[in-house]
Amino acid sequence: ETSEAVLLNLRDANDLITPLSAMLALGHGGTISGAAHAAHKESNRLEKTLDLLQAYGLHGSVTTEGLVLEGGQRLSLPSSVVRTWDDHRLQMTAIVLAMGVEGEVLIEGDRLHCVADPAAASRWAELGVDVGAHLHQPW
Image (cartoon, rainbow, N blue to C red; front, top):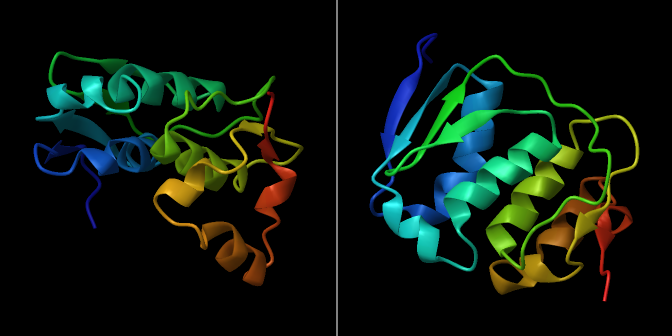
């Protein structure tokens, strides 16, 4: 455990960019580097991660190599449907963040998590979390 901002090089772990960004913003903050390649995933994962965090009232900045997140931030209830840009990593992080706010959260993409973990929703349901109430398919 540390009380200082951390530096994470995610050169070989681009799937962790979105959840770790949320953890940094809610924790002690830090910088994600080595992630320029993430601009070419299912979405521009750097920019879209920041957009996702902003939907929950969190902020940071995109750099050429990754993201910088100030720590100690607090979640807020999104004011509209949370966009995921057809990116399962964004959707799964959005679901976890929705568990941390009071009120109804609608998240775009009702089956995106199935790309990485088809059983995720059923496991969360076993723990008492109805993620189906959050998932929204607009088309």
